[in-house]
Image 1 (cartoon, helix red, strand yellow):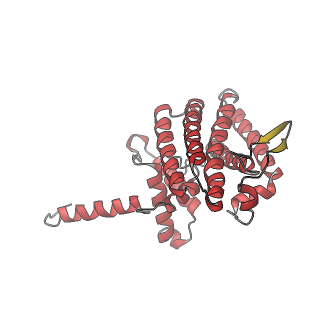
Image 2 (cartoon, rainbow, N blue to C red):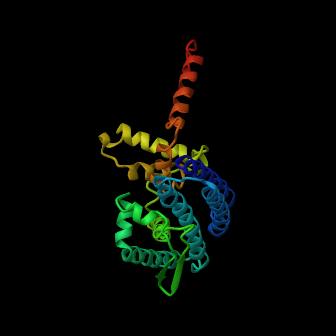
Length: 283
């Protein structure tokens, strides 16, 4: 199951990178294509799960907590982004900033209403997983605002919908904060010559691996810089949005083979360069 999650996330990240490169700031189109792609991957993994026989409790929990809830969250997130971008006012900075702030406050209020589940999600807690992420013996009907949610016992658990919504809101919160920060000019801390700007051309996963390596090595501020500071700095330098890099790092840690794939490639590349230039005066 963990390998399935890692493979799917790598496929999704690669696809979304391609879409973002092609459509750049057309967030509505990016959202539309991302929803379609993630929906297909969710259907694929659901079919695979349903065909599995003799699934243990730990595998069932992992599937519903980390795979189905996560993919459902991505679909909800892109649907929310699309709705927000289509509903935004004309491009006047003050109006746009106010608009994004209002949406952010609404998201924060919704997360506060789910305070217990939100804290459980943020803390990566597991003590209630059997109650939350194992299928029950009968269908459950939950009231969600003006709607009644039918939880099919065959394909859902009591908490999948709630955790998918929380993760979607958390991703949206980061998206909105970045939008608002751009209006405040906080993303322009470093002077960048656009005509000579370096462009990060490998995957975002590779850059995230580098971020965590630099943090682990303590190379900034005598080891006092945190992950967020390093990630934001490299995002500004290379003009890259790393999204939920902590989630991607979880996938990196779950690799069965070669957990430090990018760092190993850097090391091998440098060794090769050194060997090739051993007899040269200048490199």
